[in-house]
Length: 362
Image (cartoon, rainbow, N blue to C red; front, side):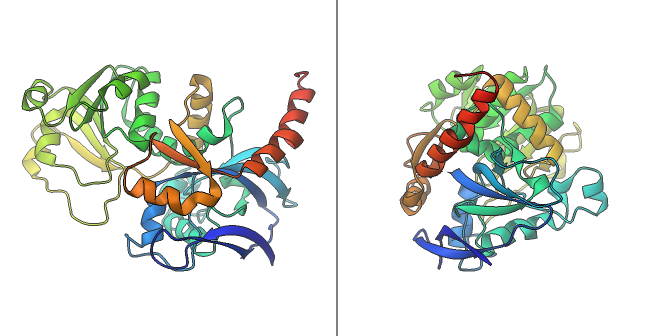
């Protein structure tokens, strides 16, 4: 078995060690990806600290990876060496059940165990080399900056999927919480033609919300603003990692409206009464990443509209420090992306230059 450098969590917490670990061989339908950058997601913190009670140590976290292919298996037909691809939370599925056959790999019963397995086999994207089935190494859009594009495969997809599922170009959408997910949601929803409103505590993030494309803003602590917004929204997309106060949320929905949550708090529960749903046929749902089809559509849409993460970059070697910054909410921008500068330079020098030359660029 071959080796790869990786930043390994050997116990609960944010301390990581740089180690040489084993990596799987490249199977006939696999590709090997050399990671350039990986966004840091709150789910990585949950895995590193075992907040969900499913972590097994040692583990290598990371699931917002972007890198270039350095090896392909003999049966691979749609990927090639040098191609820029993304690796997200969904690293595989059973690929044979009714859901997979219907193009709904993200809700296959094997998807979540296989996602966690990537961490436990030290193949999260905080490893330098990751092996992936061809299908789940998704081509990155051309023309976007590499590091800010990395969070598209998780944060971008997480919010794109419910927006694509539940909205039209005339929908009025409320984004709850302007953070790493919320910032992406505002960009996607506004470019989809929706009327977008952001709700956050106080007004400290109002200008940022408007800059990203929101049409207006609600201070969740203002009773007057909440009252004026009652019954206004077709979709409420809740991106906060905490359980919502449904007494505050449900009155904001229109009849037939949908509340969709994408965060995964480690404790507590949502409290809801049937009378909040039945009289006006309101609905609640969860949404997890997205199918391969959703990913491909999201990447095309992001490239067309120039959507990337509002992020700050740090060297991959500072993963432990970055995790502490995110945990304390001390990040200066909405997302932290960890970069392997030497791999970025290799990609730019070896493949990007060649690609431009083939296209007649300079």
